[in-house]
Amino acid sequence: MSTGGLSVAGAILELLGQHGTTHVFGIPGVHNLPFWDVDSAVAPRIVGVRHEQAAGYAADAYYRTRGVPSAAVVTSGPGTANVVTAFGEAYISGSPVIVLASEVSMGHRVSGGPRGLLHEMVDQGAMFEAFGATARSARTRQEAIASTVLALRDAWGPPAQGSYVGVPTDVLGEEWTAAVPHLPRLPAPGCDPHEVTALAEVIAAARRPILWLGGGVVAAQAEAAAQALAHRLGAPILTSYAGRGLLAGDPLLVDAPIHEPEVAALLGEADLLLVLGSSFDAMNTKNWRMTLPPVRAVVALGDLVRRTVDFDVSIDADVALTLTALAEALDESGVADRPRWTDVSGVRQSVLTRLGADPRTASAIEFVGQVDGGWPDDAAIVCDMAVGAYWVGGYSSQPRPRRLVHSVGWGTLGFALPAAIGPAAAGTPTLAVCGDGGPMFALGELATMAQESLPVTVLVVDDGGYGMLRYDQQVFGHPERGVDLFTPDWAALAGAFGIGTEQVDHAGQVGGALARAHEANLRGEPRLVVWPHRLFPPRTQSPRWFED
Image (cartoon, rainbow, N blue to C red; front, side):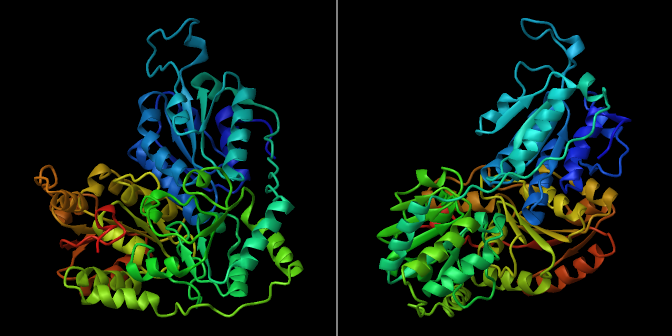
């Protein structure tokens, strides 16, 4: 523990550092400068970005790839407002990003309302409460530390949740002379034995069960327990976007999107769907309009999943603890190991072969294969809301959990380029898969990548505009308006920041370009790879959900 010589801002950062956070992200402002005055070996390093939204995105991807909460350090008023979009993506996706914001000085406030101070707001934290998050605005140094402790407790969960902590600028600069507290982890919530017994009975009665694994399995470190259950039941395994990489290479893993007809048919043959650690959201389920088995059960923390479809058995508890209890209940019920009720080993290849033979999607499948072959397994991939990124996010082969990060929680365009800063700052080479529209939201972060010598490769599939929206307009019979964009000379643009660029002419060149870019990343050199091409969208996108 640290004592003496710390400001309140320093104690806040040391709190994060004591709990495993190595990097936070932010921008200095006139009201939050005490954060930048901290000189502590315990405190995480603040990586300076060029826009507060990027700070939130980077903290989000830092958590998704590492499993450790991070923070966006922002100044009051407009600085805090700028991070709201990124916080929304993180919060909806279950990433516990903490927003550490300054607020206007207590010494300058008056009772009865605002008085016209720079950056003053009536209720700065209310912007975050709109998502259902907790906002804590401190008035004293004791409240500032207590608020941070509670925010960390929220962040570690369970369930893991982001929150807002606001501290007046004069309080941030005050001296903190007490010990910096260490936060004990809360125990995971156990399960009701009666609910587990009911789930075991449902499983015992099923003959064709299927498992759906989400990010909650990753967060609970329950991959081995989920695998044991699947093999005991001979049950095929589906994953959500957040669950991609779970059980990689397992013969029961389908490893293809539910939106494809082969996978949808498999789900339709099942008589029991067991959802583990997933919110079962709209993007993963075609707005809950896909054909579901007649019996459904769910184990997931939080009540969001219970607002989606009707479940016959619903358990709100830690996934790992519940699976342990379930295994014991199945033993007591005499449920023996079962053979596979269907062979799913060829489903992924069947999907890829069919799509590769379709002239509309052949180049996309080749592209996905090139990304799989050109980007190493131990590096991260961050996907934007873009056609090329939809293909990589849904169809690429993921060798492990926490490798793929996709902004399909709240659906924020412009996510990938700034989000890549998070894992890259922590030393993980990161591929940002974008269209040509998304990077325009955050071009300033190329400067961050260059200044920090970050191992980032930005892959731009340039289709001359908002390709997904262009397709939407075509499908719905609308005029193509607002979707064709002027795009820059990418090489000149990246070159202005000292970043090297390689342009490829066809999908078959992507893998080699990525391999060369990764070699540069290992030297601390960010890279840009550009492929000018219009890809046809995959079935994971809503205009194609219900095609014949």
